Length: 357
Image 1 (spheres, helix red, strand yellow):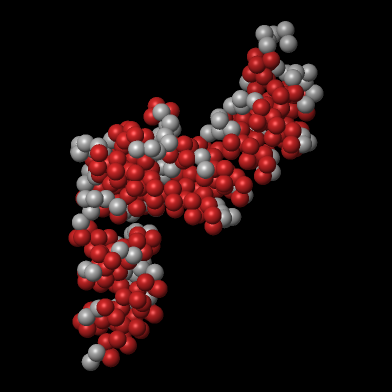
Image 2 (tube, rainbow, N blue to C red):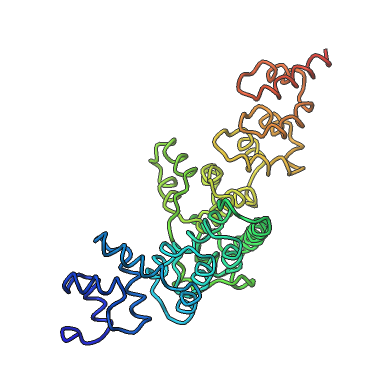
């Protein structure tokens, strides 16, 4: 180790290829005479090395380590985010993933992988970490998209979203009414009313790939500054904008594939009945938007909302069937001959129209 002053320098030299390949191979095989905890960290990092043979040797070495020993290692040492991320790709045991999920240095990207693919124990750890979820709301969608997500976690996701939206509404009411909503102002207000949020400068403001908003922008040509600004927002910013923003902004954000953003739009104190009528007829929105509209008694007292829901091919059939009998005879005939609605709803409209003749 004469070329290197300490173990960290040696590890850096190995990772950067500054030593003979045989030395790197010894490290991957666990034959390098350095402290065990440092050797394991090095092997995990070598598991993604471009040298395929070396990477396979490193993976094999990491696989030989007892899961309990790995858990203790993760629990004890201040590992870098990259090491934690690579570890879950080499070892997939629930106990290892659970300990990584608890680690203070785990990145949002790694947490999202764990949320989307982890078992029940990992899901519970992730959903109870409110600080990290406030920092990266995309984690909620990853949990919801987990093929093994439990009913209890789904319930807690819903509870978290409901609480967040309620507090965000209160925060939006307290914040100033500038033209552009400030996520910083809203989060400060949220902290004042009891939300557990880390310091703003430490929040990882990651951009999200919200396909629904992106499509709305593309369909409109993406020329206006409003579109350009919305497409660059992360989830937190979109939620605050949904609550505080303009009619134009709500018309775009209602197309979001993120339920928290959509609930922000539908919870906005600025939302008008005419907007709800328009939303009810949109074919670009998620079906959950139409379900939320259907559950609101005040909105459903408006005939135009009922008509839009029944005539919208995106409306779930079970909802449309309940609403058909509320249509007047003229609109029943329109639905009965429409090729845009589900055949079940069309037949029911035909039956009601015949009875009223």
